[in-house]
Amino acid sequence: MEEKITQFLELQKIDIEIADFEKTFENLPKEIQELEFKIQSEIKKIDNLKEKINTYEQDMKNHNSEIEAIDNKISDQEEKLFSISSTREFEALQKETGDLKRLKIEKEDLQIKTMESLDEAKKSLSEMEEVFKNDIEPLKTQINSLEAELKECNEKREVLKISRKSKTKELDKEFLTQYESLLEDKPPVIVPAIGETCGECFLTIPPQTYIKVLQKNEIVNCPHCRKILIPQETTSNE
Ligand SMILES: [Zn+2]
Image (cartoon, rainbow, N blue to C red; front, top):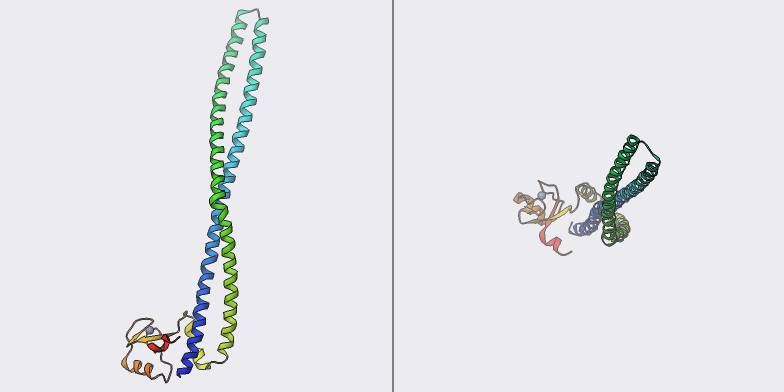
């Protein structure tokens, strides 16, 4: 029995290593996904800002052409003023010109505001692009190294699985069946009894059970968590 236990402890070592890799497989993809999300959301923000800048630039063009149109009208009317003889007509035209000049001032105010927004947006964009270059761009390198790590873990896990498979061929079938059914609940399967206490669930085991553990003649399960119990010193000579 003692030899069997030693063999199974070796198997358990492999299973613990495999379980550690499984944890990596749970964590790494999540980490990679989070980094990718961060990069994508920064790209989106920059794109949105660029779109806004385009809108402001289009607005600037519109303001310019509107002001130009008003200017043309004003100079047309001012020319007309010379050829008008009737006072009433003259006054009406003069009023119209005055209205146009006020409209021009309004448009120029709008133009200034748009210009200010445009400058601000451009400033924000260059700041964001700077942050992107310094803080976000390096995340791509981080993703690459995480992906490399993931690949390496996968390869190591496959190697472990192969060596596990060849190892199990030499093992006691009955013990293996029990071991594997307990393994579904994650390693370790074989745990030391610390005195009359289970080293896994830390509940007290009956004295007669503990005696059986010390005798090492049969497989002894913890009556509470079902793990296979062995004397404490057996695990320490790994
Ligand atoms: Zn237990």
